[in-house]
Every structure is written in structure tokens, then in C-alpha cells.
Length: 249
Image (cartoon, rainbow, N blue to C red; front, side):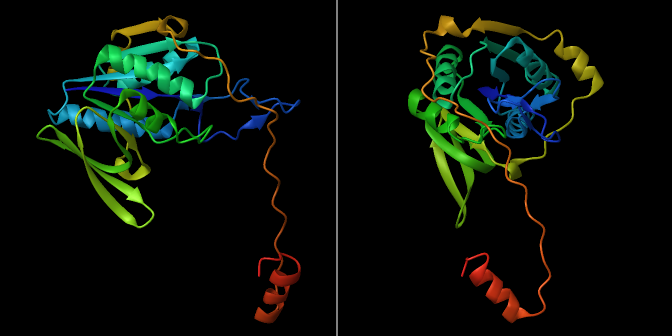
């Protein structure tokens, strides 16, 4: 079984994002970049399925500028067998990404696609669902447990009311949640081996997808700073301030 794992290059989650002085976008100058944490979970799950003998090949794919190959090499060092880079300098939306991935799914014909439920920069939580619709495959989102057996994949989902388990016929699409697994670290020998693993580069324009923007970014602003708290003398004063100042009751 072949597993395809889309990954994304984002600002490292330990770094505080800065806004450009003209409020046109987030400032990425000299900012440490990393693989999206949910994508790390997706890669880890695919590798575990391969180690268990369920999968035979793990293919990592990313969409973006040439610098995105750094994250693909990380995926290869973690255990992926092959990488595909869809190269473009365009600022893409979720639908663009889903359409490009659908082309790769058509070419590679993986039985399973595992991707993070969302990226920590845009937080859209859309690509997995859109990809499932475009590829006409069953989907299991927000997975906290994945079990593949007898041509089906059972996905335990985290929902508002608790846990829900769905059985999907293969081929299928899965998006990962935080509690699915704990991603491993790449060892130095595997980092060296990753340099010799295949990494194919495909121009986004060659896939026949219309990348015309449908959303215009007007401005980006930092969240308002929180004001300092105050100490109240008793419950009556707390209730009064909640009524008159906070106006929440």
C-alpha cells in the first residue's frame, strides 16, 4: 500500500510572528521555518504504518517555493521513501492546493492520503476535505487513532461529544489531530541518507490548475494587547464589574 503525505512549510511554532510595517502581510525575513506540526504527525503515522508492514511506500509532497525542499528533506530523514515538490512562488489558497494535490493523487494512485487537519499559519482546516471531494474518496477527519485492516481503515475521530469511529473503504483521505501520535526526531544517519533519496520537482503550471487568486488580502494586524487585570474585594464587586464594565452578564 502506498501512502501520500502532503506537508507544508510554516513559521516555526516557537517563533513569534511579526507583521510587516505596511501591514501587507506577515514578515518572513530571517524567520526560522519548519514543517507544520500537524504534518509531522501525518508523516509519523504513515511511517508507523510502514514499519508495521501495512504500507510499502511513503511519499511526501509539498507545494511552494524552492525553499520548501528543506521540509521535504526532513520528511525523507524521518522515514519517507520519496518526495515530490510542486514548485511555485504564487501565494496559494486551500482550493488551489487541493486541486494540485488531486493531480498528484491521480498520478501516484496512493491507497491512503494522510495530511494534517490544518496548518498553524492560515488555520483554514479546508484542504483535506476539499481533496477528498475532488478525488471522490471517503474521508476521516481529526483522527486520533488509525487502524488499517481487511481493505478498510477505521478512523477514530475527535468530535465535540467525544470520540466517533468511522470505517472507510480504501482508497481514502485522513486528516490528523494532535493526539494521534508523538512525532519522532530525525537521526543524523537518516538525515545523511535523506540526501540520496529521490526528490522530484514538478512545475505547478504544468499540472493544468488555474491558480488565479479568489481572495484578496487586505491587511494583516497583530492581535490587540491584553489589558492588565484587577483584584476585586468580593463576589458582589466582581458581578458588578462584569455587568457594567465587561458587559458579559
